Structure formats: C-alpha cells, structure tokens
Amino acid sequence: MANVAGPGAAGVIAQAVGAVCGVLADAASFAVSAICLSRIRVAEPPRAARRRNLRHEIGEGLAIVARDPLLRASAIYGCLSNLTLVGYQAVLVVFLIRIVGLSAGVTGALIAVTSLGGVLGALLARPAARRVDPARRHHGRRSRQPPRSPGQPRAIPTAGSDRAGPDDRDSHR
Image (cartoon, rainbow, N blue to C red; front, side):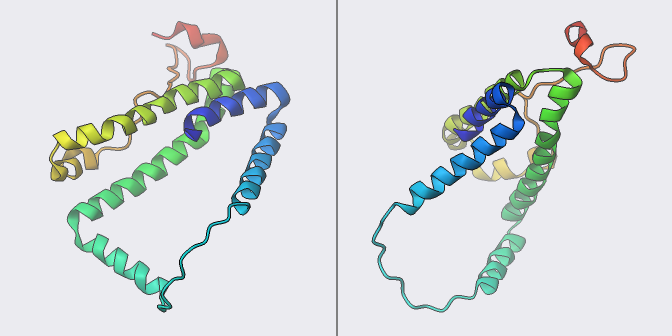
C-alpha cells in the first residue's frame, strides 16, 4: 500500500510545500511510527537458551541455495531484478521532472498508478501459481530476461531531437 499511496502523497507534498518539507514530513512519519511501536506491550514467551551462531546459520542457508538449481536461479534473478529496478527508479523521478517536464504532483500520481500493477500482481499471483507447474515458473526464458515493468511511463524522443523535452511531449508517435 505504501508503494501505491506514498509516491502520490510525496508528489503532492513536494509540489505544495517543497521537497525539503516533504523529507521532513517523511522523517516525522517515521518518528510517529517508532513512538507507536514502542507503546505496544506484548508478553512474549521465554526462548530456549540455545546458543546460536549467526555466521554459521547464514553459511548453512547460502549452501542450501547454492546447491539447489531452482533456489540458485531464483536468488540470482531476484538480486539482478532488484538491482536493476532500484537503479531505474532512482533516476525515474529526475527524468520525469527535469527531462519530460512533468510537475512533482503529476510525477507522484503517475508512479502511484503504475504501482497498482504490483497490487494487481499480488492479487493474481496465487490463482496463477495454481495453474502453472512450480518448476516451470523458475526455469526457461523468464529467468534469463531482464526485469520489465510494463506499466512504467516512457518518454520517446521525437524525430530530429536527441532527448524528449517539455516542449515535445505532445508530438510523440
């Protein structure tokens, strides 16, 4: 939900009161969350006094992933997908505002709308998984293709220009 509502709210806040106030509002929301979480009182059952070695447990988990071809392919795909998408998202806002010329509010709303694809995917994942053999989900072409987000906005340069700017937004083909 935060990925859907957050960018839209951030765009509206940044446009209304400026980016610095938007960052301060975000920091204040984290402070409110921390205060609320600190006020929760739960009596947890005592744990068994077993000595654990975190490095050993991490090593065991990595060994399991390294030995299993399905887990290994899934882990590699997940790592590369996250790296690619985080890099893409890091420049998306700057690109949409500076190059395409959208306002902060429109940019936030656009990113929020495209994030609805993730919500739709979460709703459809279980029914789709029931219809597809689990091994086929991890093998094949899908694991070798770069991540793609079909709903993400694109700016297409017009003929004769080296970049899409605010003045040539409407003349795309």
